[in-house]
Image 1 (cartoon, one colour):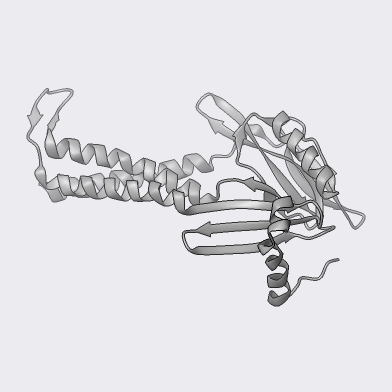
Image 2 (cartoon, rainbow, N blue to C red):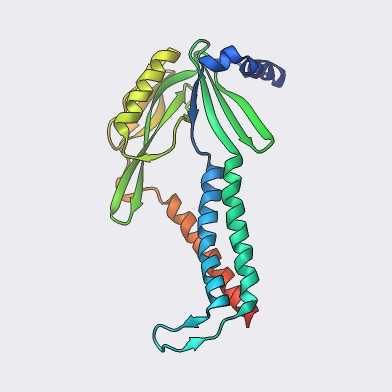
Length: 248
């Protein structure tokens, strides 16, 4: 069992990345963080109240049923530009993010790098001998026309920790399996090809970690994205109600 190093030892390990020779031999694997995904969703949802507020502020509204036209409400215009400004600022902020992993094929290490503007965090995810396998993980997501499977490549540690190495992608199982085999051969660990419609799991058998692929109940696919959308939608409706009352 590996001993967790102190802060000084880890800082010394991370200083290896300042050597251009070390960085040039590493495989760089970029993927979007949850912060990036969250900001992109919020920015996109804010476009809905932006359109509504500016349309009501400049053009008014004609009822679909009574065909009665309501006059414009200029008081809503500043709120519309405010939500537009926030949305644009969120999209621009995505440029300041940098999220990637570096896989060192010589020392068999995996580093995680996250940066937002001038703030940066680096850490050693796995050291030599700590990577159990590089493989593909699956996730069922329930959509409008049924359950769809998404896959991403990841490194799995002997302690069960799973570190993403790519974004979720609908389909693409063969692509990630091929890349997993290539990276595993470079870092001296096992490369496992994932079967279709399975999730990765690490179980302890006889004191040894064993990588397994489980077939979950796809009738209850992941609904995290829908929950975020529902929450953002309710927040948008509350904002619209507040702005309409303020504009009267």
